[in-house]
Image 1: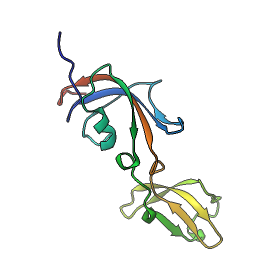
Image 2: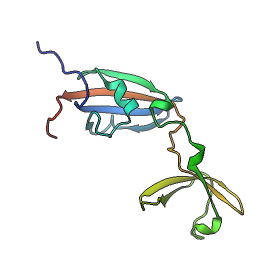
Image 3: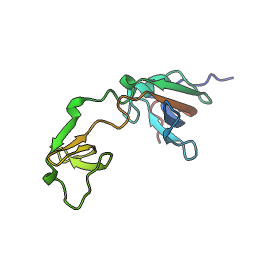
Image 4: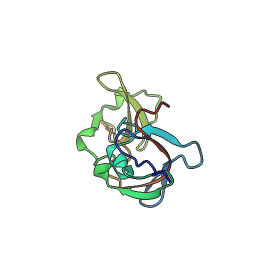
Length: 151
């Protein structure tokens, strides 16, 4: 009987996953679709999510609690910017919760959430929407292959 390959640095992993808030609200899942494949350390998963997969083998299933510091971090007050209302398209109704796309200094698209609107200012939160949240990361490992296996 061959020993199952354990997930380690550089392993190609195929899995089903779900990310849920502490109250059980599902944020993302591929359990009803095709499994995801990635190489450990390729940047597709945050390090805190990869860390809990280490040592798992094909067939393993688990749910791990991911603290904000290991997930999307804590909200950073410096990521809340203030704009003047006239800087926005007058056709757009600005209201808290509205997600808009902005461009940073390198002309890269950056999502921001309208946090507050007054007659004189619009506060936009550029923190990740899951910042500050503890997440439940449910996984079922479908396959583990050695590093270097072609896609």
